[in-house]
Length: 107
Image 1 (tube, rainbow, N blue to C red):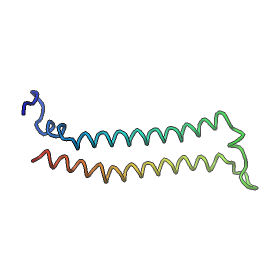
Image 2 (image 1 turned 135 degrees about the horizontal axis):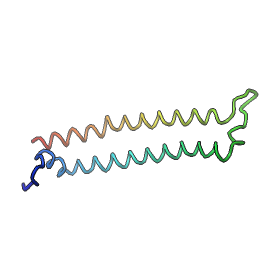
Image 3 (image 1 turned 60 degrees about the vertical axis):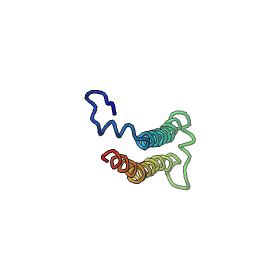
Image 4 (image 1 turned 30 degrees about the horizontal axis):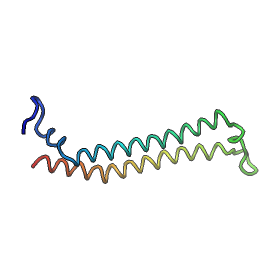
């Protein structure tokens, strides 16, 4: 195997492994998808604040709570949920693939 000068052979074996490229692709697609979802939800809420204050100011029931409060809570809960989804996938599928890659590279 002809490796460039200064490249660790272990690194070269990892980079040559198709599972490594699969891991990178899956992790990048998943990460960017989660980022896009979060940006849509967060900036959607901010856009409502900026452009449709009357919608958010609608009272809910006889009290003083407006529609903006549960929507804001929804943004917070959404953030927690997608963080949990990412951690679950990272600790499951991504860690499993990483372990397989390292096992194969150390042979």
